[in-house]
Amino acid sequence: MLQETLIKATRAGAAVLQQFFNNKDLAISNKEGVNNLVTEADHASEKVIFEVIREAFPDHYILSEESGEIIQDSTYKWIIDPIDGTVNFANGIPICCVSIGIEKDGKMIHGAVYNPFIGEFFLAEKGKGATLNGDPIWVSEKSDVASSCLVTGFPYTYLDMPNGPLECFERFIRKGIPVRRLGSAAIDLCWVAAGRFDGFYEHKLQAWDSAAGFLMVEEAGGKVTDFKGNYYSPYQPHLLATNGKIHDEMLQWLSGELPVK
Ligand code: IPD
Ligand code: CA
Ligand code: CA
Image 1 (cartoon, rainbow, N blue to C red):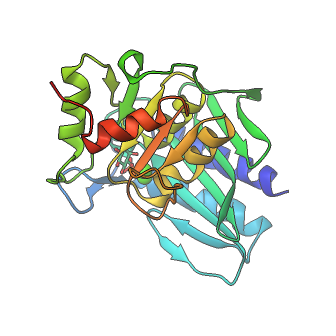
Image 2: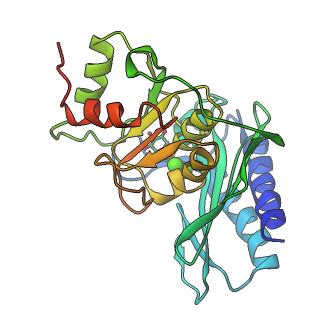
Image 3: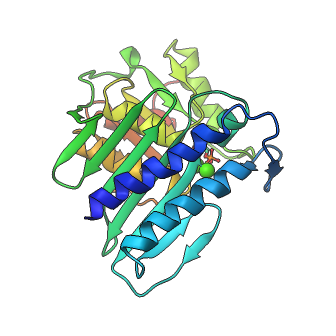
């Protein structure tokens, strides 16, 4: 029932994305920062997702990007990004998705990420693996960073800090290591889970960006931590997700321990 509702809610949100995609009259406004957008589709997607969840589980706790927290005395918490990749969405770039994770007693137990524009539905359940459109997926086999294909994301407001986003990016680029930037953290994580990328890192994520995707990577056999190698919590900003094999080396690259030249 829980996973059934998760799938139904994710599909309902994604149908809204399809309805509003490339609509010239799409209402767009800005949150904090210069280009941190929210569109009427984000709100409309959130609304239908809430309706599906409330119909089945009226007493569950909800944390959602545009509405914040709907606090309930429940062991279940739904963590929702009604559109991950809003800048892509607003520009007609079909790399965006609905992302929903479910926690029970503070542990992520289900995740769903659906990009309806390329028809990819990723699903994970704690201890039961991860799938893409129903088929099991696994992380890649690469064992060194030098031959890896990486992906990252940048925050809306530039973070000027040691080992910040541009510094880390520069380290990889100077060594000729490909680093992609898709614009949707949830999709980045799912693509690590599917073995398309060997690693993903980002400096400032919110719980709704990573809730479903980090479980996807773990269930596909990968590893997810913060930048110090601690077990990942979606309630802190730093995320490193890899196939497991390049994880320790990636931690060194991010901390600047490896020679840069
Ligand atoms: C953003 C995307 C992007 C990441 C940003 C997120 P949004 O989420 O996941 O890839 O780099 O940090 O905020 O705003 O499109 O939901
Ligand atoms: Ca997001
Ligand atoms: Ca969003």
